[in-house]
Length: 246
Length: 101
Image (cartoon, rainbow over all chains, first blue to last red):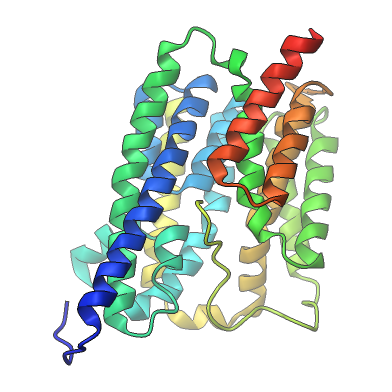
């Protein structure tokens, strides 16, 4: 990290950024427990659940892949859904690049931490130093606790004979709804959500499992090609990053 | 087969992350790209909810999961924490099955 002019308020700012990062980490770690349990209920084994949290490390995509597999879909259709859902991380990276200024091998490490939470805790800070600390502290805290949570959840569900007894098959819908809720601001997202759900559900009997969700992605593309609503088109800065856990 | 999906998904998601940090920032000036990227999670999450709730294999299904979704919807509307939403969805579905079946 480069030297910056001394800022008397910095120690206090630093402490509060780290405290916030740990808070976000604990919240998402608890959420990861439900991910681990749902993954095992969907038919993944312990190693597969852990591979997702260690290597994919982006909650929405992990839930999506597991959800498609739970519905009897082809795992490759699940992978495609996960990748489409992960496309927002590329957008976050474009915003973060000028703040992080990472080069060489460090970029390969920093990239793995580009997720909703680290982006939300980094953008909008008053200094670059604070933006970087917000990114790394949150990213690392979430990475460690997210994986610990997955470990606990998948081992816990493994210990159960039949996880679906506890309604775990409905838990995934609850998780998706909690992820969707904060994004439903304004008329357009509601319309897209309704249309996408309708397209996917109507397609269910006619195409292989997993494909209905991919068809719904076309709704987003189609609406994206229509003119943006005049009032608030795409905001310049910062991107819409839901602040709540994943 | 599950491993193939897991590993390809992991690779694709990582490539998107590294691409964001590496590509020129002027891509952001394309409003259409931004618009599609911000609508994509809404469409996919909503579709996943629909399929997870109203499908059983290749058939439409209307069962206890609808109760769980309704309860979860109420919890999200009340802005209750994530874990509470997930727990209530699972618990209400399990309870409904227990009572009705």
